[in-house]
Image (cartoon, rainbow, N blue to C red; front, top):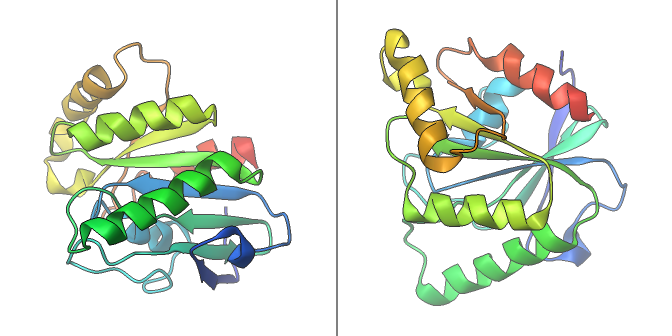
Length: 193
């Protein structure tokens, strides 16, 4: 897919602020600093449309990126490590839950995990949460550039065994640095669009 005119549209913390145009939404979930913003920038060939940070917990609102008036990439705040207070974490958790369970425009969830590490307890909770939402999703094992290219297949196999042992959910490698997996991800997304 060639993206010509992506734009950041709005940061929201509740339904009143969500876009009203009924475009389909592709939602990114994952722990803090797993690379959700970098994923967006890579997919649309931009360096800084989605703001990235080396310190976890920077995204505290739901960010909507309008992709050529065709759909939104929706970047949710990350879970796990963050400098947010307990109260802030609860508030963020509540509006994420409300968004995921109430928003009718969600077309697909992209669940990012770090290919270098075993899925955390929080990753497994999120996996179960997504399953219970009933929404279609794909698992992206991100940061594939951080391991040798010859080890990607075995790392992918480990990820699948640990998070989706039945093997019924599509799991793909991804790297914002290498960009070699980008077309596979677009091909998957386009099945839903």
